[in-house]
Length: 151
Ligand code: HEC
Picture 1 (spheres, rainbow, N blue to C red):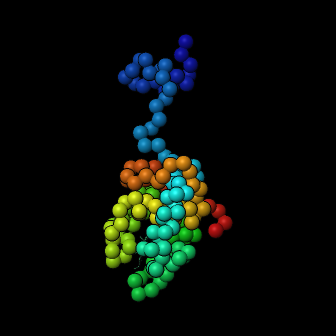
Picture 2 (picture 1 turned 120 degrees about the horizontal axis):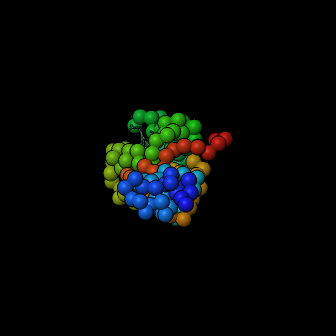
């Protein structure tokens, strides 16, 4: 006799599906708290950030208002307010198409990914076993939610 769980997970057009495990959704949501980047990636990102971004966003990412406009902070509460609920794909795409200001798109994708990894690290998200992906679909699985408290 079928269990209730098996009935609920049964596929509509497949009578045999009741015997299978429920399939995971196509693009499962992932949590930044499970480790979305590697420490190696963030280390490379730190070097690249210092070279290409820190002049405007400040060495500690607190941002700067100057002749270039308001180079927003990339850490802390203002950053969180601006990014809350958005997918990492949006930040990644903004970086590749707009930054560094005046030299947009001058870095390869893997460098933008490394810098984004460093931004995650600076905000207090933990490193994990796999590098931050570079495709929009994979990045979209990560959302800026549950920001680290007390910063
Ligand atoms: C010449 C100054 C300058 C440099 C260099 C620069 N930025 Fe920016 N950045 C800005 C300004 C100004 C803004 C505000 C948006 C705009 O004017 O397009 C900004 C906005 C941003 C934002 C959006 C922040 C938000 O909260 O919406 C991100 C992310 C960002 N920059 C990342 C980078 C990265 C990564 C680099 C290095 C690869 C970089 N920037 C280099 C000036 C700069």
